[in-house]
Length: 84
Image (cartoon, rainbow, N blue to C red; front, side, top):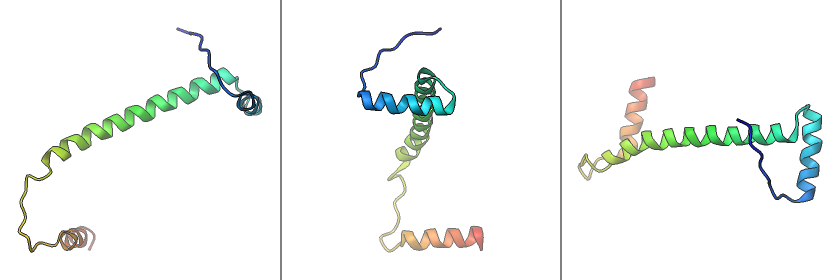
């Protein structure tokens, strides 16, 4: 379903956008639509990443390491084991 949208934008921005639209062979409406679609996709990706990270953050603090453990040394050892 197609719907109309009214925007209030500086005239100079509109003029530049029309030039870009014409140069790319698209209408200004199509450019705005494509931009909004890209924002929605990016938002969905960020939401999915946040959901994944949320599970990991829930685990934070569950493991108590001895005070003399060097986290950076553990990371280095894990990288060396994995990559040689």
